[in-house]
Length: 444
Ligand code: LLP
Image (cartoon, rainbow, N blue to C red; front, side):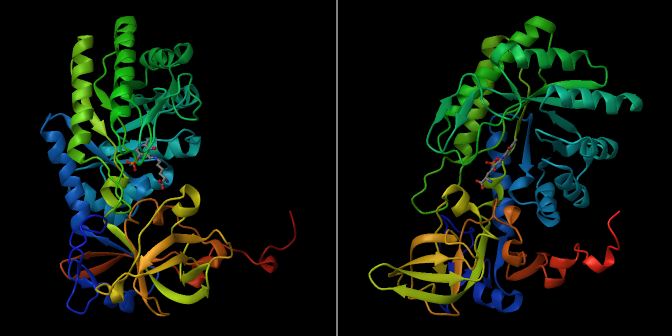
C-alpha cells in the first residue's frame, strides 16, 4: 500500500509492516538517529521543483522560480533547489547567510523584509544580492545611501500591497490596506514609491512584487492581484515611463496536510498566474515582463515528516486518550498557532488497522501543546513510533528551545540511504551562549 497524497512520494508499507520512505525503514532511521527526527525525502523536493519549472515552461521561457527559504532553511536543501535551477528568497541577514553558505550565487538571491536593518542591508549589499525587494520609503533611502559610495545601482523590486488578501478558500479585497508590508495603493503611495525609486541614482528599479498569502487553495485571488498590479504598472508607465521588466507574483500555493485537503495543482497555479500577467499586460499594451514566483511550502512541505517516540499514554474513560510524544510545540508550533490539522500513523504498526481515536500531545508544560486532536491510529503503546506527515514547511523553521528542548536532527533520505543535514542539538548547545554570573565581574 502506498501513501502518495500526504506523504513523500516514495512512501510505502514494507514487508515488516513498517512505514518506509524511499527504501529507508522509519523504525531503523529512528534507531540510528533518535527522536524526534525530521525526515526529508530528496525525490519529493526535486520533483516539486521540476513540476514548477515544467508548468511555467508550458507558458513561457522567461520566468524564474524562487524558493522561499523561510519554509525550511538549511544549507543542504538550499543546495538541492539550486541544483534544480531555482533561485532563492531570503527574508533576513540570517537566511541570506545560509544561502551564501550553500553556495548560492548572489545574482540568484532575492532579499525581502519589511524592516531590514541597516546592519542586514550593509551585509547583504556588500556581499551582493541580485535583487532587493524594497518595502518602504525609509528602506529606499537607506539603499540609496549605502549604494552611493559604491557608485553602482542595486536592482530593486518594490513590494506592493494590492489590497487583496487570499485565504485557503477565497480572497478578500481589503481596499485601504491594513498591512505592515509594502506600499499600499491608497493615496497614490505605491505610485509615489515607483517615482522615487526611478529618480534614485543608485537604485535600478526593475519591477514589482506582491505576495497575497500562504496555504492558498483557490486561485482567484491571484488573478485579482495581478489585475491590480498591472493597472499600477500602466499608470507608472504613462506617468513616468516605468518599464516593468520583472513581475514577482509571490508564493502561496497550498498543500495537503490531511487526505481531506484539496489544493490546486502546480499546473493550475502556473496557468492562472501566467495567463493573468499575459492578458492584463496585453490589455494595457505593455510588453511581457519576466514572471517570478516564490513558492516555499509547496516545495518542501510534503517532502518532510516528523517521527516521534510515544511515551506516556493517559486514558480518561469517556473523555479521551492522550498519547504523549517526545516533541511537540517546540518542533511544530503550527497546530497551536494556526489550528493546523495533521494526520498521524504509527510507523512500526503501519499495516495495522487504524481503529483507535487519540489525542497526540507534546511533552511541553502547556495544556495547549497538542499536535493532533482526534487522530485515528493503530492501538498505541509506549515505545511506538508516531509519524506526522507534511511537516516539511514552517515546522523546523519555527522550532524553538522552549522548555529546554533540543531541536531535532534533520535527515535527508534517498534510495535507501540517509544523511544528516542538520545535527540534533545537545544539552551543551543550550548553555553555549550563556554566561554564568561569576564570569561577569561587576556591573559596569
Ligand atoms: N514570498 C513572501 C514574500 C512571503 O512572505 C512568503 C511567505 C512566501 C513567498 C512563501 O509562501 P508559501 O509559498 O510558503 O506559502 N508560518 C506560516 C506561513 C507564513 C508564510 C510567510 N510568508 C505557516 O506555518 O503556515
